[in-house]
Length: 401
Image (cartoon, rainbow, N blue to C red; front, side):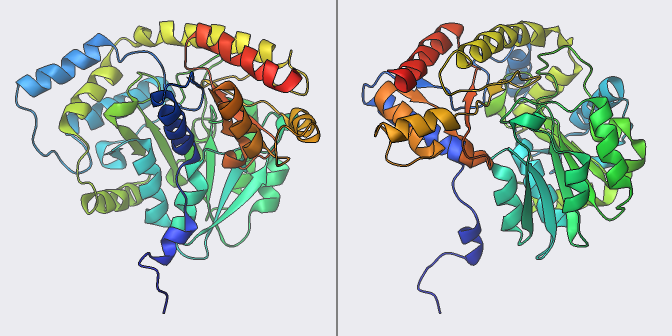
């Protein structure tokens, strides 16, 4: 019998690396260090006033009690309307659930459909929590490496080769965290052709960065381009990124009624309803004139252009354009090798490189290993252009001096 008080499932997961690095950077900053944090994945813009005012009005009206565990009917109606209006996807309210952030919806999806021995295909680089959430259920993560040479996107041949009789779920994330890559309509169509041949495989499409569009091309997810997959696809999204509402904790999912019902049962036994006030705010966001997003996205475009150009001017760094979200994911293996051979870092990897940047230059980045992509690192350009200019100057000095 083990002496540990912890369950076996706790051995399958670890603390979110992005949150851990952000916490370390904040600690150093509190100690008086000059730290520029490029690790956190949240916009530096304030939540729009009309959204905050809707929440204030809800408080003043006394809307501070329990709601239905899976979300208020009016917010569900707003989600259904949004998916119809913007994505040409038709759902009814019984096929929609509201969660405490997009992460809870992903968590509930995995718990609802995965069993021990199931396999989950996850293209890498991936958002840090996908593998941990999948493996917490006892399922196995099948990670497919998709490097910079293929713009960080899984190829149909890779998907076909990875699918086995044990495959239960494929997770797609476009625009991507951490890379900013975006699947085109044609690329999704080719992936859909593979998935149509495997009717027992479910799809989770994480669209949380849908509105952070850096290339002005229309957004597509896989069920938009192949409606035949709708009965086994769960669309995952939320209001955190588009409306700068990370702390409000509202995500949502839409999909087959049986799966959404199961996700609701899980939620009823864990958190119950998302915050009543935040639901009112999210409803206001979804039902509003979406022009409130434009200034934020325009700022991200300017920052993105600067960051990519600056990274490609650093010896040993290669960085390609993002198409969405607010991240850059440079390939740094040559720079890491140089620092290691010069004796500036003790290990020849991106973790040591990231620690070196934080400790010697006060720049917090996330190592690529956290995203299943050693040799890379992620920065968020959801901070001011002035901060980015200072940070990129420091990174250049750290590598080249």
